Image (cartoon, rainbow, N blue to C red; front, side):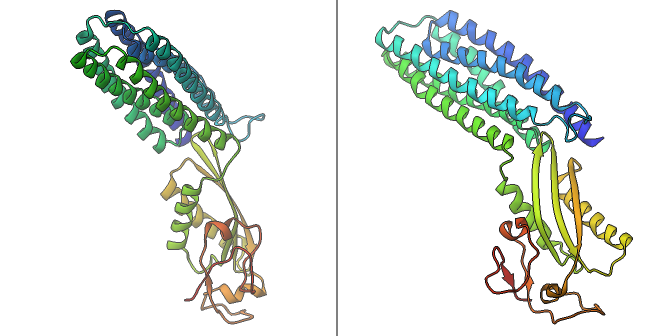
Length: 342
């Protein structure tokens, strides 16, 4: 239920961002018409990408908000990665078009008209874009929405490019050097292309289920700090993003003599811990393993009546050993094992 609410919230926000992109595009066209500035034209061209990307993001969030079905048991969240990839590609294309237009105008500089009115209009668009972009990024991170984050970064890149254009046009007005208009456009187009590359890179990482190191580091820290004695070991941990939903798989080693209900309580405790830290939009699939004789060396449980060996050292969980597909022991040369004396 919480996941559905987040998906609908993301969709509503994207709808407003798309409408905003259309309005700002029209404002920039007016500013270009008044001034004839190639730099403002490049800003307007990028806004065309904003509009197209906004509609793509809108559709992708509509798709990702659909509930799970027989054909999509993990939901439709991957649509967000595809839309972000398209948006990043469009940003990069816009950067190339801007460079082309800027070089043409560099070869044949043109005098500006009514630059003061143009500066006022694009200054307004910069302020609106920055506020909207910050809101999108903040909400996207909270709701685990790559599409919203991509939209926010796109809006903020538009803001920085507009600020650069404002600075360049102001300098042009003060100096009267016409070719500054084209130089500013070229420099900003390179920044725009770099932003597009980063968005494409992030979306491809999501499509390919690339491990999120920062997320795993946070997960490991939380688990180490809140680890009860019955959680003897944890391994084969994986986290996959599907839009606003995180799916976590893991194998939890617990004392072998716990009955089904007791084992289930340990799994529920793990689920509660993770959801308290990462939100209700996380789904957990935890497999319980019974401890074996070699587990005694890493088990700090003091009231165990069936212990086969002495407790020696506790293995501190790390990204490497918690992701490994084997139970941990104190054998020499054990791969991926980091040990901590207690």
